[in-house]
Amino acid sequence: MPKRGYHHGNLRQALVEAALGLIEEKGPTGFTLSQAAKQAGVTPAAVYRHFAGREDLIAEVARQGYEIFADVIQYAYDTGQPSALAAFEATGRAYLAFARKYPGHYIAMFESGISSNRTPGLAAAASRARSVLEKAAEDLSRHIPPERRPPPSMFSAHIWAMSHGVVELYARGPGAQSPFPPEDLLESGIGIYLRGLGLIPPDA
Image (cartoon, rainbow, N blue to C red):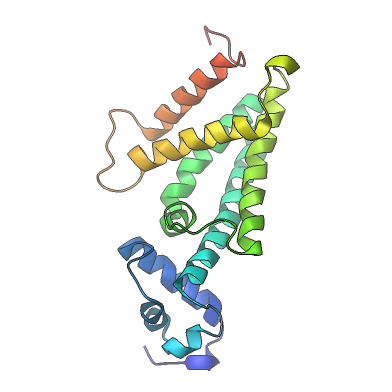
């Protein structure tokens, strides 16, 4: 691929796309900015017009990932009606779907060691994603008496942690093996949690 240097039409996004491929292939710490530049077809010096270092490039990959993630779970929630319960369960399935479809973004977001507060844009995107889950939890927990109602942020954090665990153990990579489909594991786990809160009757 010929070097295009400063005349690259959209160098910043080209570097993000290059980083995505390298993250999936080598992991978030397994490549250099020079390798990302080579993948994008530009000189290493051109990279520094947009990113101060590899961590800043990964942070941008993570920011874009959180934006996609928020859109995915928002869509799942909006179309998962007619009940708050059905919509909430749909957001869990969307988490698994996102991790499978966007592995490079997922790794940058959750496995790179980059803080979600590294840049204002990344912090805002991560906050938006969390707010979708918190809204889903808030809508569902309205059925719980106030004295027994967990804060929406805690409720959504529990489900996020459960979803993340299923993804990490059973839904990513060729070595991920389970006697049950990841979707079934997550659905049953969410069911147990919601029964404990009294949101699903014991015989449901």
